Structures are given as structure tokens and as C-alpha cells.
Image 1 (tube, rainbow, N blue to C red):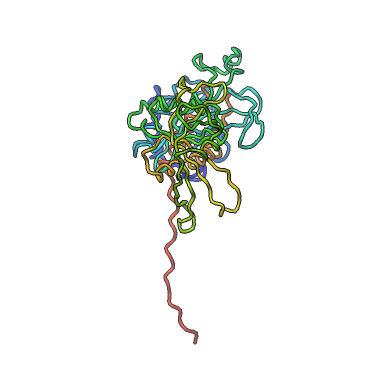
Image 2: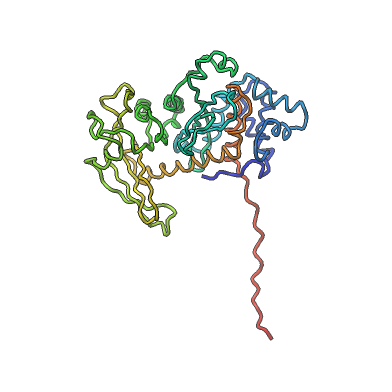
Length: 405
């Protein structure tokens, strides 16, 4: 999945940007909103490094009016972000249907305690407790790229039950404290209404979600296929109605239907280095004290995949585990979806490093969603219109050497 050029490192084609902005910002009701949206988009694409409001305004126009206009547009103008995100989605998928949907958790470090949703949280990736916002990004994955087309900000009880905090951050009355799994199923419900696009499978990393079983149950209720990575410590059962047989790693090893499938690893020397996939029938069990989608007795029937890396890599790699409903697909097709997860991870890193995901300085809920909507638009534009590399000079003519006299 090509990531394109980082903002500020490549020129922005004015004609292409104008045409893109006319499509994506058409849902905005006022001409001045569409004008400021295009200015903000151009600034996101042209400013290198940190995307502060001051730097974005200076890129748009070095006047006080520009700074006030962009500030008003992002933090105070009452425009709906959902229709604009839907327009981004339609633009991205106009060239072909989605290959998959994916949801990534994005940690946004913050100083202080006033940015909406900020809290202290243990980050499993870094092994540290950080002061941060936590967002969920919905990605549409195509054959050539992946683009975030919707966002959720995780808010805990400390924000949702504090009337003063809610009022100060302008959190709508309809927003409640909900776990990440509930937001993922909201995404799935919206995707199911997208016609053919809603039939694409879901590619999820549920290793750190205590509600993994509930998420899979919910996807089944929505009629969605999925390929989801789960923790080796996730509870599982070997029969549809039986009690948990232990954690996934143990249950998979004792599955009576377990068999091996050898697949060539892409990128290995000669493309021949194999790794082994063991798969068999497995059901996830809910975590202790949780009900799994109201269907705790039956669970979710899935095919279990375990990818065992070869010892020739020279160091130990823990086994990784996926649950998938794609029982009729060729194994190579399922594994290609698994590999797409790495592309989503690179997109998240690119968004954090170059597109202003971590740079919003406002404190309000609407302002945050407005900014993230513009981030999605900027990322979509650069993925759809990557800058061509400079042409290489023609090779020098091959002149035959003359023997020395």
C-alpha cells in the first residue's frame, strides 16, 4: 500500500485539489464553509512538520483574517462532519470496491487535562502509562491503499458523567461512555448499509480487547465476514456449546480438526521460504463476567488459524492467532488479508507523523471531529493523487572504448 508523499515535501496540484474539494466538501451548506475547508485542506497538505493552527493559518494566508477564519471553521462553525466523511468514502471507493474494512486504535499523547477525552492510560505497545486521547479510526482498505473514513473518540465516565466537563467540551447529549467494541459494532452497522461495499470482510486486531468475543458475535449478527487477530490468552472452547477449554493457544493445539497448510512467505529469498498455518474449528468464549452477545451458550463458530514462524529467522517469535469466518476462501486469499493489517499499521504511523492527527490544540468535541475529518480528506487526496517521482535523466550513450596507442 503506497503511502504517498508527506505533506510539505511535494507540491499540491491546484487543479486536482479544487476538483477534489468540490466533491468532498459539497455537503457543507455555506460557500464560506467550503472556502475555508479548501484552505484548511491545502494547509494540511503544504505545511511540513507540526500542524498547529498558527502554522496552518500562515500557509493559508499571512493575515489575521485567515487565522480567525480557520479557527472559526474548525472550532465554532456548526457543520456536520458525517456527510463530509461519507463523501471522502465515496471518492476513495469510486475507483473500485473495498477489499476490507479495518479499525485501528490511535493513541494521541497530550499535556494537561483539558483536551476532550484526555486521561491516564497504560499503553500496551510502549509499556508505559501515558496522558492521552484514544481514538478509533475506521479504514476502508482497497487494492492500492487504505484511508480513514470515520473516527470515534473514546470517552470514559470521568468525562461523560461530569456535567461541567461535558459543557466545557461541548459533548453532545447523545454521546455516552462506551467500550471500544461497541464503537466497532457501530462502524459495522453503518458499513452494512453501504450496499456492495458493506460486504467486504473486517480486518481487526482484538488482542487487547476484553470484549473480543462480543465483537465477533456482533459481526455475525450484522452478517459480516471477518479476519481478526486475537490474544493467545483469549478464552476459547472446542465445541459449540461446551465450556471454555482454556486459552486460544491451548485450545488450538488440541483441536480435533487441526491440520497444517504450508504457504510461501512473500518477500523471502526466491519466494520459497514456507511457514505453517494450522487451522481447525474453534469458538471464542466471553471474558469472565461478560455475556457474549446474548448467545453465551453457543458462541461464534469460526475457523481458527495459527501462524507459526520458522525457526530459521534466528530469533524467537511468539505464535499469533486469528479467527476468521472465511471458511470457503482459499487460504492464500485469507492470508493476503492478514498481511493487509501491516499496511493499516503503516497508514496509522503516517497519519500520526505527517497529517496532524496528534497536533489539534483545541479542547472541544466538535473541534476535534472537524479536524479529524479534514485529516481524512487530506490523506485521501494524497493517496488518490500521489506525486510522481522526478524523471531520471536519460542514460549516457555507451561509447566503445578505444585501445590505448
